[in-house]
Length: 497
Image (tube, helix red, strand yellow):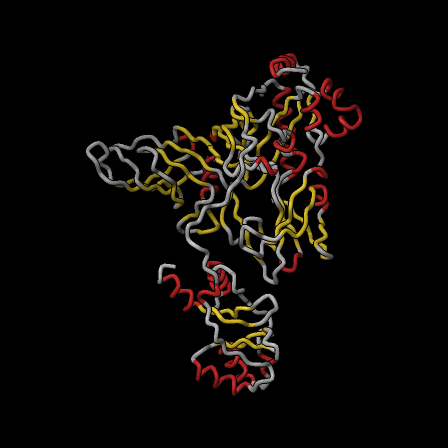
């Protein structure tokens, strides 16, 4: 048995034995947990990846005349101001008014940290003590009184992976997912992850000093969506942005999804006893997660398979006979640099361990949102009497049908009413110009479809994404059972859902 005070004394004397989380498993395997606990004092851990639930509290100082900021924008990214007169919180995922997905709160944070000028624009209502109604100026991090990085949810213990079984490219917070299960994206650093080396949360808790963004920071409690029962613990952290390094705090954009902040976090795990030694001997093959099918935009996404981090880091995953390329959204390279830098801090007596004041909850369970309204499915709003044709129909006849029925697209089916394709008024126009005679030559075979039990919001997103105004509704057998149009959906929204 050792104590944190004893290990800190070893640090002061330059005698602490420090190993990385990648080295510890071999030591425990070779010498056993008991001897490893006697030999090793500290195991260093680290992670670097996209952590959306991040942001910074800023105090701008008072203007003259005084202003009580009601709304504030930094490089046209809106910050939350419902705190005090000249305080604001910039969230990493807030998007700019003028640059959309290209720039957001995460980039504002990086720009400030890099010493760049940031435009501050604010409006307010006038009072006797705060008469000013607007202000616009340029600021840097040095001009700000406090810049406190406060992240409600960081450093997931582990993270489920993502794939896509549909025939369309998907853009998600897990990155771009190729159709046909051709790739798997995952996050986290496996055996290097701080919380994977403290799975019972014996060490990491409220008050634990950590490496945060290149500076010393602290754990201030459990993170949001903390789910320890399933091994998905999170932490909430804080630190002084002014002391951090842009190497470990970077704004990023996820294609067609939004912005995020890449954060580097490390923890020094004191090896106090045999149990902690055993816990820090975790290997990538011991850390298992599910690969979910993100083509189903529901909480109840199907699981394609369970996989361990050793397989994920190999770069290839077998998904039912499909060899999917596995790519990490986290950086092992930078995580290893964090581990090494943390070790250097300790060796140079710049970082000492702290006792946790309170542990992370072990019984908490992540719950989905309670929704009082019933989910409205496509079957509620779709048109059931849908006009269909077979691909051997005459193009002129199809054109006349469109005019007669006032539609600009018709699903094409086989004799069993199963969808084979779709033809639009634009297809007919092109056929007329080119002299095509066969419907099979001009129809679109790769069709965007909906299912009867799919949420209306989900189908609305499809119509918006693919710039179409209708889509056939097909059942599990591929039989056309209806069609849902933009007009149907608009009527649904106008009725107040």
